[in-house]
Amino acid sequence: MSEQSTWQVTGMTCGHCAASVTEEISEIPGVEDVVVTVETGTVVVTSTEPLERAAVDAAVAEAGYTLV
Image (cartoon, rainbow, N blue to C red; front, side, top):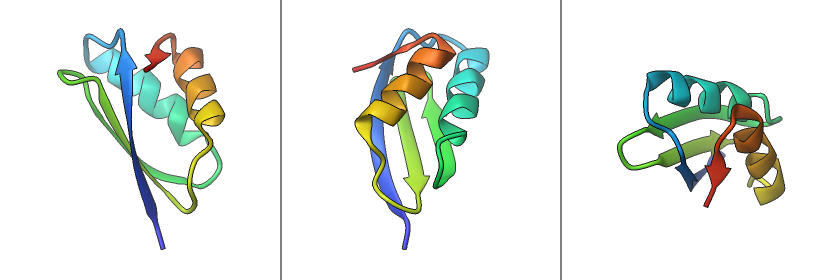
């Protein structure tokens, strides 16, 4: 069964931003899908198990943005 979590990310302004965040979060073990909405700063992640905030925070930071 899949888990879905929604995160807020600041600093994203374009498609390249969304692609960077998607790429980094997709590398977290168990992540199945990432949907980024730049306009709202929303990132919806579907995964095989609940994600640790620290893992998402590290992935977002690696992409150059900030998890709220």
